[in-house]
Amino acid sequence: MQEIERKFLVRNDLFKFLAAAKKNIAQGYLNTNPERTVRIRIANEKAFLTIKGIGNESGMTRFEWEKEIPLDEAKSLLLLCEKGVIEKTRYEIPVGNHLYEVDEFYGENQGLIVAEIELTAENEAFEKPDWLGIEVTNNERYYNAYLSRNPFKDWKI
Image: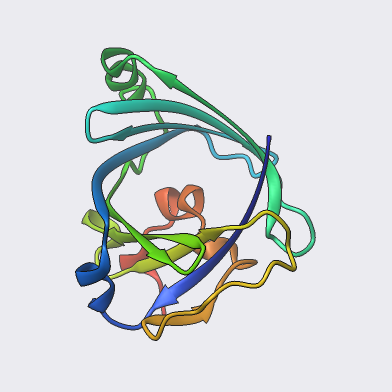
């Protein structure tokens, strides 16, 4: 029940041509407290309830619990979520022995593209494709819970 993940910005859209799968996602937060975020996600026709704990010092590792729930229940729960439902397309891209999940955001987060890779250990080696940009793993601005409250369109870059 632990997630080890690294996040990166994406330089261009070349990753789209390498995608093995693609999902349209809507997600909202019942609780955005960093110590225990509670998320409702609808990905295509499947729905999930996810609880995440606070990250460790590196920002790579944190508690994660997820359970599939009925789609109609997820749609009802999205109506209860805090302001700022996130809309994005997730592209799944195999690279070496790993899978990158690249999220292209829409709505108030239009223009932001973030890649994530899940690892089995914080020091695990992995390939970095050319389209991968700078690492933002420990930058809370790129967490979805933060983006739901502070959309990318409002950032002063």
